[in-house]
Length: 440
Image 1 (tube, rainbow, N blue to C red):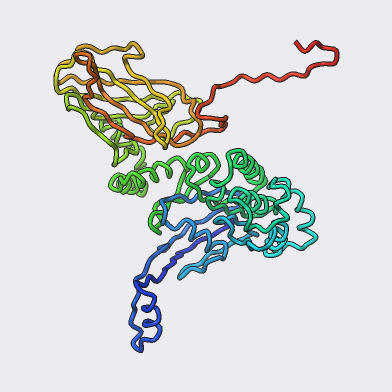
Image 2 (tube, helix red, strand yellow; image 1 turned 90 degrees about the vertical axis):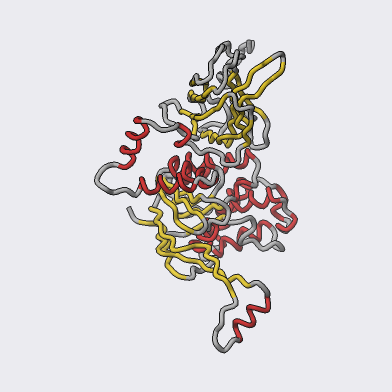
């Protein structure tokens, strides 16, 4: 299949000066002395996007995601390297890019249409669809500098997606709109994707990355890390976020092992032979951990419905939280717990062995237990945090033997989000009331 976008050996270097005067000194120095430091926004980056593919670019802030999109769209020029694009591009970069703040919404629509190569007559034919999609009322006749960020993104996205582009490029813009507008945008993106439009997207919403992308390119500090299936790349990205660079490098070495045997199969054989579950998870390196030390949660796992250890769980499927505990003292009645919180710290769900009537008593020093909590994932798609503990009651007082706060993240992937925190799994029935019926 033909490439829509080919990025080859692209490097983007910015000159960083300590003082403004240093720029002048450098330009006037007879010996061409350098007064700047080089900052590599991108370093020898190469990848391809095939026609009709939806490709995501992910990475931490400062990894070069927006820079490469600007180079692809022609907003920036690379220092070295080349970018080849086949097809007309409609780009939705950072909020307001390409808009004149003094022009009205209507004037900006026509101006951007002209820049994309459309005639006034062609834009006349597209105008109503754009206005209907944006749904900002009479504000289209006002200067865009009077718009809220929400209205801005509505108009910008409506324009980008209704000009029938061969290539659509989206950079984080949808994070501004309300949830209903975001939903409408994603439905429209799905429609044009099915028609064969190539889509290149940057977003921090890992659910969207996994749901919509055929493949993902992972960047870190301007460098190419890996590309591959969305779920695997998101797992690698989580390791960067959790600062698990040693684990990341080991996995990359395994991915690039072409010694004649399947490295991933070899890895799975090693896993079956032994090893800890938590080594296959993204664990939070800055977790809070405390307790009196009489018990130790030495391993933990998140397992999907197929038994895979992963931070990525599908809404609507069963999943299991496992804890392995080693006791360093005799305890009469230990209680094992887990809690799932949102990013703001609100406790959304959780339980423990006491609530569930699965009491374990008593335990001796040296005993080890594995506790499994299996349940259905009904939380909406999004990012969550997992905490777990081993506690108990002694002389009427609550005692913490070992507690791990925010020890791991959970990314829930959803094909259907409802309103609120969790899905009540409504069964919907709709039927027509025939004329003359009582309606009962």
